[in-house]
Length: 239
Image (cartoon, rainbow, N blue to C red):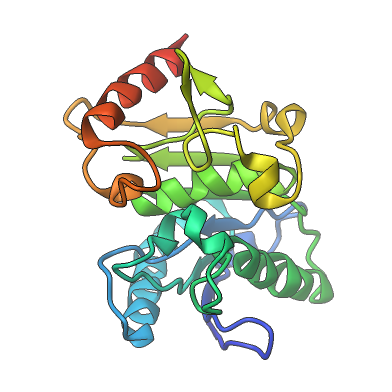
């Protein structure tokens, strides 16, 4: 089902309610945050990718008896919106600002209430998942809004964050850590809630840190520093 944009939310989202979930007594909604793919200034492009993503996820929805949502979040060259880049907190462009807040409106402001109104007992927390940039979005959304997450599955997130302010003496600002979290978001990082979230993270040995969150070195580090940090972060997470 295509859900149109509203006066307060310019994003379109798509939902799939599986027949297998009709008799479920405690429904948990699954969220794949966006359709991924490449930068494009035509919003129809991102709508089509979100729709196509939901289409191939429908089998998953039927198998595990969970409704699914994919939001059509734009992606452009100058700002990596798909990963909730720090720049999305300051931009004045409504289409590019705070995609996490717009997703909250779509899921918790619109879709979950519609299921409850239809008589379904629905959990207020969701299972969020994604691969590559969708995985990066998922990981950062869980850090920003841990109270809304039941669990996450993340694949191919080569620049994944860890919930610390620094590592081996190197500061970790958002979106790689939490050093400036409160000054950026207006609230402290909720470690006590975040640490309770089950997280399944898949990163293959051939995954390489490339552009992603580090495409703008002025915001983060140089490529060489980033490569070192990737290894340190993974070692820390394994420990």
